[in-house]
Image 1: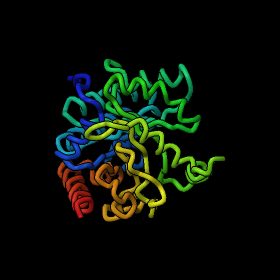
Image 2 (image 1 turned 60 degrees about the vertical axis):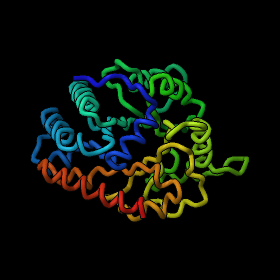
Image 3 (image 1 turned 180 degrees about the horizontal axis):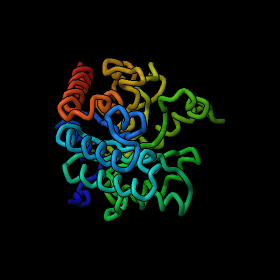
Length: 283
């Protein structure tokens, strides 16, 4: 069964899901070591069992799934077919799907990436897509335009959790503004006037410590990787994101997935993270 095309903008649908289920986003990251720890083979059969189990275990519990496209693409066309089914099953079950593909290019190529993930009717149609703006923010225009048309969203890499990101994202432009700060300003402009929340989000690492020098109030969601295996905790969220914490979508992947293949253990782990996050955000 395939979920219908959106009838409301992504930001509104995400706000409703976060308010209803809490803001937790769980990654679907079937890398070889994780498949092995589940007792699965590192092949398409293991990939499909893993993905199906995660969706069946958590689709009624979390606000967002974030499949990492690369872990499916490594198996070629058969892996892509599993990704298509995973996305369709998750959306049909009522969970928003953020495709973590980090696409970025110019012109017709960027438009083709957008069509792949953001055009209703596409086999890989998702509710939102991660994109890279480092060919210039304007290079994302085809994806921005299609997202507005189709009611989907984007998450733009702004201040990522990997240490290497700083050499680009903390670089200072001729006008004195940092590159990451420039991306946040573009997103704030995209979201201007949106209610209850804009559809154009930023990726901002939960491991980055004090970000009070950045304006994170973009009136859009802030995808926050780094909780769990990367060392950040739910308690860090208010300190990192300040007044913008209500719009944070914390992503946990290994912290939850390592508890599989037990469905009960996956559900328990996700519930524990969700409760920690809810308490931290409400504090």
